[in-house]
Image 1: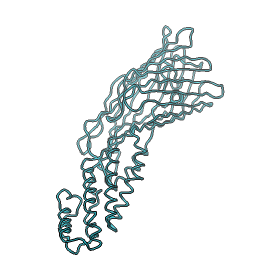
Image 2: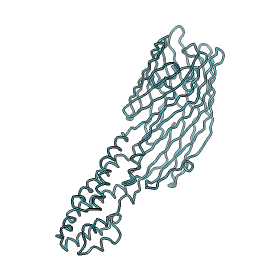
Image 3: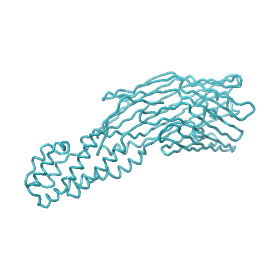
Image 4: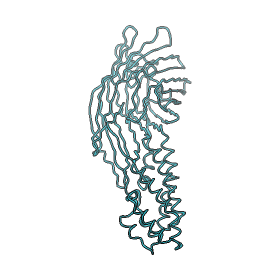
Length: 461
């Protein structure tokens, strides 16, 4: 799935930052909805089990590795999070560092203004400004999948698979507005420049000339958003540091930054049909897609709210997967190829109040695979032949080379895998592992920017 955006915009700061920093990073979710596949590096073009064949390559219904004639997955559920910009740790560090310090020192300056509190707040705001700039545009990608059931029948004449699944692909990011960066920078500069005046006002040593210069500084048009209108001009010979501190506005009152999220929830209902001819297995999966797109882009304020009804659109479409597999006669080797989502589809999101919308595109994906299967061991490899565009315009594309293996120890199956992203970007290498114990299959994957897991219940005989 690919999502392309038509336009962008803005960002954020202090009080509202707390809500954003704590809520924005709570996401996480997954792509491989079959536990055996995830454990084996995401492979499945030639190695998917009979129960998962319709999900990976319908041709495998007619060319299963096992002697099973019936298989059922009921259900499989997975989750995976991709944080290519290390947003989670950056947010925690910022909230526990410059953000908390800025809030505390802002209140200290307002309640008991001193040169020290003004200088401390000035430095905190510079740190906050840099931290927010470092977060801007860094996405968190959320994927989740559910297979309520997948039913497969293998027959020498015609094999059939029936399945339903649902998956979500969502990405969110924070856009830091240039105007917010200017505000915090000006706030820091102003506090630093007047810090010496604060102690002189507290001690009564501020001269009239110094007070006049202070009033001129506070009245500068550059600081118009930071200082209460008319406050500076009302300062006089009897003014105190508390009078000056009360002139300062809360910088979060002029927030222009935004939170942006875009994605789709896609449900599929499909019937896979497969048969063999001249030793080659062919499969096709006609399927109905039910798509809900959503797009959210709002300036962050204390009253920022989200309405799914106003942010989403619904679609229905028909698509298909095609696959082929061939077992080399007299050998344990199998090769295969699959085309997922044969028909390109585009689904638009709602248009927001700024005139922006996103087009969510489901494009064909072509993968090839090879497998060596023995009675107690399997080794397999998959290669994406297409470069699969990122789910959002600011995300990374992927094109995976995946390797996996399974060792069947009768009562338990041990699995491991590895995959690397051949496309440019930071999402390079992932390792995975899992096990099967009777009808239960578990798997987990981990990479420098990715973590995920799948659990599943299935039967075959």
